[in-house]
Length: 208
Image (cartoon, rainbow, N blue to C red):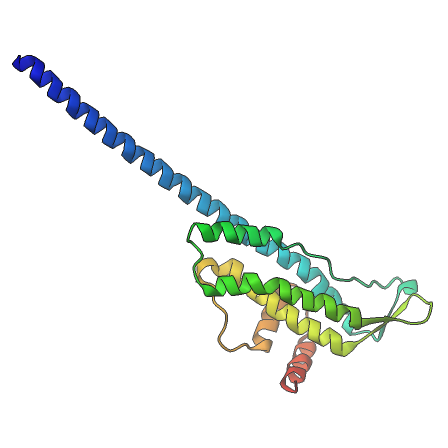
């Protein structure tokens, strides 16, 4: 009887230990999968931000090039590039899924993500007034004041998106925006050498 009793004890103990180890292993697998999912979402979010920046930057460079001309003549082989329609749905979805993991670091992340499409809409609206077609000729007049407004918006947007990608969870907006500082960083990143334009726009902004 004692032998049978001991056997029962060890069987019960083994079952309890097995159940505990199974539950613990299941928990660890669940935690690992959640963490892996979080890393995938985080990486995808910053990749999407980088992709959006690349689409914005191509128009940004074009606006600067056109700014130095009174007009663009397509007959002369000059190019006029308009802004692209950017779909922010993937950016929003990745942010939402990351938010569900309770891993959105701070309010600055949410502010940037909810604000970036609004800034791009402002650019699209201003671009309609940036260029005017002259008569029936393939010649377009450049409105410099609207170009300055667009460059100002894009400098701020591109700078913040760049900081968002680089700093990730440590990203925060600057308390006091310094256009010249941001512009030098953005112009340098996209190989635009025009310090005079930075100074000109900075002076314009001070008078707004």
